[in-house]
Image 1 (cartoon, rainbow, N blue to C red):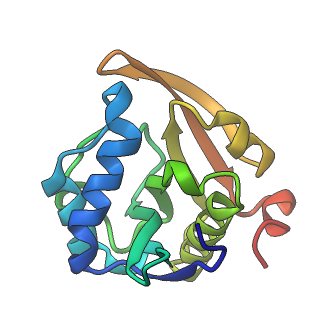
Image 2 (cartoon, helix red, strand yellow; image 1 turned 180 degrees about the horizontal axis):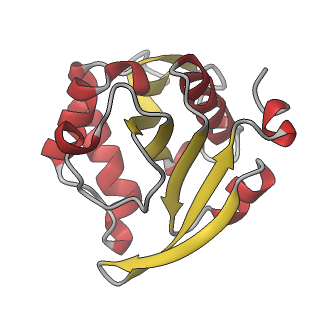
Length: 177
């Protein structure tokens, strides 16, 4: 696997690869999202979506990780398969990370941190004060990056921690300049 990854805005052309990666990572425990919801995220808030692209040994590009987000008017619990056409608020001050994922073969190389830094950058550019997400398996990762657990919920039989980062907090200021 290559060590060169390029962060770029996600495009609608990436949708099939993102859906495949979502299924690979989250399908194992039933947390994958409907392909049309992922497509809607790419269309509704494109500036809130990014991919990490790399090249295979044969020179063909592939998506090693991706990020989707939306903006909300207020802090609340995330829900799987929520249509961003109904929940996204262009003037919202809360950024919800709807998905942050790194391909299994590319994990433990700092790519999750790069995607998280991108989400923080997006939040700041968009005037957001907080970031919220839910996670079934990466709570320690987010705790290391100054998120705090604010609760938990169960959906589809999966317990998910609800994590919040307050961007007005000094600790959050040191994550992404």
